[in-house]
Length: 118
Image (tube, rainbow, N blue to C red; front, side):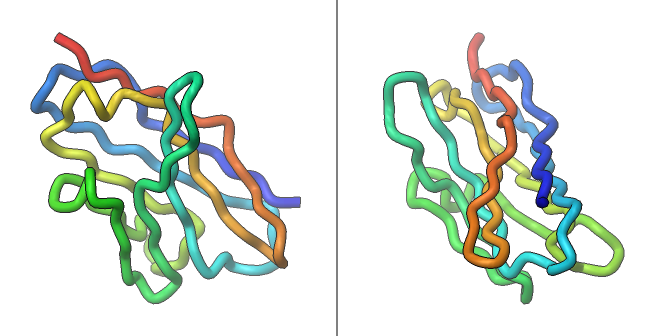
């Protein structure tokens, strides 16, 4: 069984920053990728960013240049990754969810809410 836990969401003013974290545990295998998605009620879940076990990253166009995803643990595995979000705008408001695929199965956390509002 794999557990995925997100943290770090909150309320921030436009132009502000937040850092989200995703921690995985409970698996014998280190995941090869961690992905972040976001979802607004009534809309589809959108891809935000991905990081591989080598540290390479991919970003969705709307967040390119503003968000940075990185490994955040001393051994540089994907057990914990953080998503640094700068220059946040109201359209970034969403529930942010972390996804990991282990052994061909997708695991999701409960999500962390990010609200960008003045």
